Image 1 (tube, rainbow, N blue to C red):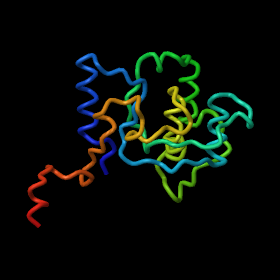
Image 2 (image 1 turned 60 degrees about the vertical axis):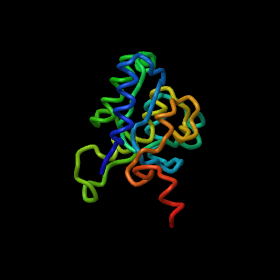
Image 3 (image 1 turned 90 degrees about the horizontal axis):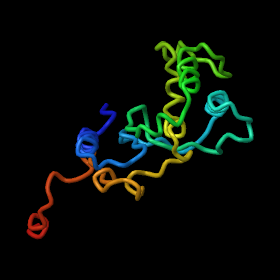
Image 4 (image 1 turned 30 degrees about the horizontal axis):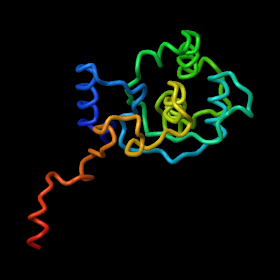
Length: 164
């Protein structure tokens, strides 16, 4: 399936090249996760940000997967040690409470990767429940329009509907 709507990616990159893109974080996927939480997600968050159980957000909500644009200052806001911890978690060098069921999905470390999909926006400075793009007034208009195939007609022609 298509992870990032091509038009959203192209429009975003055009805005970056033109020097008019000011958004600190933009998830590029079309599919959105239901907001929620789990034991495994809370455990990963705690170990990642080195916090106490009571300091874990009640829910996380964002778009699927790991395709996004991030402004440089957001990337630099975290230390090298923090990013090294992410790598170690993804590679299995740091323990987590939950383990992968390789009978269900044999891809190495896919379970941890899937958990990170619910956290990237928080890791990169956003609130735990990222607003849907269409209601996020921080975004430019092109990023708030749903351009996924089948969602909008290929053309707007009022005379077609009037004749029916």
